[in-house]
Length: 209
Image (cartoon, rainbow, N blue to C red; front, side, top):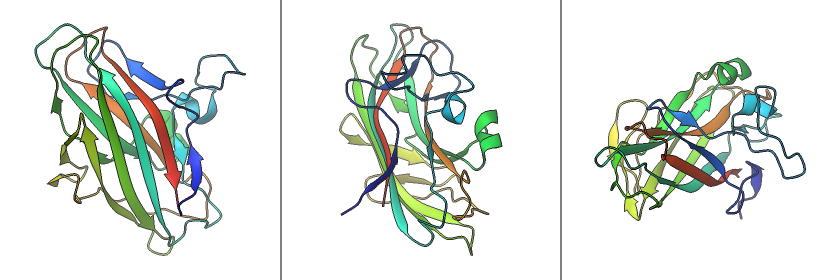
């Protein structure tokens, strides 16, 4: 039975949320616990990004592990059938995480939604990965589902498939499973139309092995 090794401190009552105006990719932020009671800043863990770190000490060297996340989104009142894209990302160092430099491991592709203010659409992603220090490669496959439909997927390496069976994966290279802070996984959302009412929630984000 898989065990949770790392997770973001979010749940159905306390999600990580992004939204508002702009069409640039928005990364789900770190969410402080209720005992902290302050907003994430640049000095928060992992620079305020809601990231999950690949554990060091060779704990997952040569082992299979999985990344999963789920949430929902709604679109603002403007525009006609705006598109929303969910992406699984990886930063390969603390410096890259701070700079917002990511490798796109996989994406749902641009999902056309109905322009219904206040209507939420559920999404989920699941990826199975493996790698080792000797090769330095992290490979994998996975799927996205949005509003009960398997999402047509354009993964980071340009391949296109239907998530729900298997699909391509933009693999990582030069990864050490011995070093801490070698890889940080994050989730991003992109809205094609800039509206203040755009909003996306992430209720779960975890790494299991």
